[in-house]
Length: 365
Ligand code: OGA
Ligand code: NI
Image 1 (cartoon, rainbow, N blue to C red):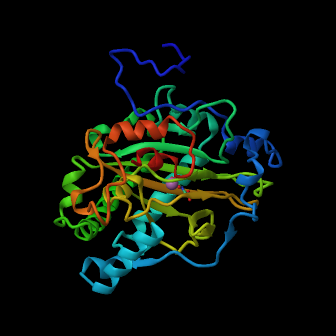
Image 2 (tube, rainbow, N blue to C red; image 1 turned 180 degrees about the vertical axis):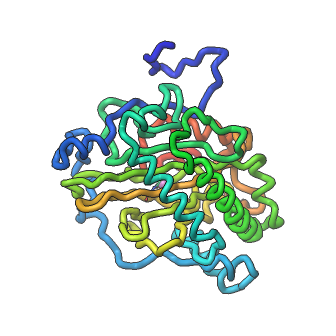
């Protein structure tokens, strides 16, 4: 096989994937070799640095917390809170979600175990040149672009039939089982959230689920090494997620995620065993802009590496995404986005560097 891919050409008999990303060094290895080293490629332009205060400030407010048990049981106040969270924040944390502590802890242990493997072992799961799944870094499209201070293992996890098990670390016996259990539980929580969102968007409670066809889950396991100059780098650049919703499991003690809210970056303080949920681009488009797919980023720190597991819930590839009829009203809420086949949207996002809200802008009429 020719490793020089770079012109977007695909062999006719090769399945057209979601995209590809250029190979980059492992940040974990850079830091392991020299904990003070911060190569030029990782140093952000001044205005993008985490400590850049003149334009945006850090606010002290906190994102909403939704009690899933109350929401599932039809509590009216909780539904109202949920609606406001989706409209005004695009982000919330869920508690009482019914996912057993052991399932969450096993998932966290599995990702920690993966990133603790020797580099030579991890390299066996390296992202192939024509794929975005595997161990490496996504959204790298030029040798010039600034790089994020993180390593990633990205895998499509559900449905099981679409998994590429060659890229799964089978060397870790508990890895697959932990993902199996975690993704099954995340699916249940997703269906609950979808049911409520469907009702709020003027559909039956099964509306969103049906519309997704065979719903998929893709999981991005993020490892953010320590950085001797955290004020110069970003763990992950500002972006919105190309999902319908994303469910994020983050470290219980280290704050790294920040969301853009009213022009300020707001840190998302971890609540032990809670899950951070955010509205993705698909939900923004379906709701005709009522629910917001909010820009977010992650920062690093000098003292402790941070890990997170982002589970992206996405529709089947052939689903056409566009504003729902129930969300459009020519006078009050004119159609804001054009329709597009989901896989085409996904490919569009994966061909570019992460760049704030550029992707939904591309769909705007
Ligand atoms: C992501 C993401 C944030 C974090 O993986 O899409 O936004 O805190 N991660 O790791
Ligand atoms: Ni994200």
